[in-house]
Image (cartoon, rainbow, N blue to C red; front, side, top):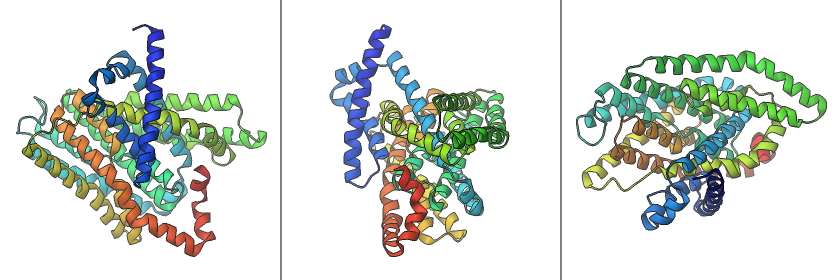
Length: 432
């Protein structure tokens, strides 16, 4: 396929993706789900599980394998890194300092409990055929399953918080802090699994050590150097095109660095966003980048992951029983454990339940991790599909459960307290 043909196909893919995502997102909002969940479902619908099942020739024409999908993947990664950069720009570290104990406790509970339960489940399945790849040791399977159960849908959690108007609030920041640290640890565990599987410990050392060095460097020296951009923006009364280009260069470089060391590019963008100056500078960044990223680039990421998902492999009662067991372990290991940790740290009961429901969402961060495991031969397509079903189910239940335990209460409180509550939620409402 020539370059001009690839360009023509890519524009068709963009049109189909944006149209389907907006339609499914609209329907999702009608039933109380956020736009992001609609985009996740849209990706699965455009893949082999629906579009490819009923119209295989047409699906292959629009989304052929090979080079065209490589273009879609590359652009989707750019959108994801930019989105997580914007989430980092909104991230309020002061709120975390005031609730550090709760953030650490929720994060540890969200790692230790699912890691333990996932490891036990893997121990039960590793000697059964059809779940793990040949040559996968018991320890490797236990670590991988633990990481798969422990991962949180950090981009999706961030967008749910954004769409619910919780960005910049104490609850939203607490959930983001716990979710980001859980995902970082899960990716480090995955790096260890791949290092052992490939008999190359350099992969794990580079991911863990390099990630710590990157985060500390950016949040200390980098933050002081970036403060110059904030002062220039305040002095000029706005951001110039050259400044925006320089920031975009830094975002792409941050994504490249963290991808290279093995902890995934979104964390590079997020950490850089946290280090960015606040005030007028961050306001201009969000005003300039947010509409394009959230409405155009980000849906490509969800759709690309959905195109690699096939749900037709769970085809027996035994396999459905294992799939249900995975789901139950995932809910108890993540949602219930995080709720209990928040409650033990004397968080208000409603907020503790809200945190548990948000942390239980896994979404497409799970799919990324699972795709890596599948490509490296750690898991089979059957187990991959079961874990995908778990990811979809836990993500779908997250938003309605959050609305049930906290959303309505928050709106009622806003009516009663009026200006005080509105003032607390202002950063998120301006963002919307």
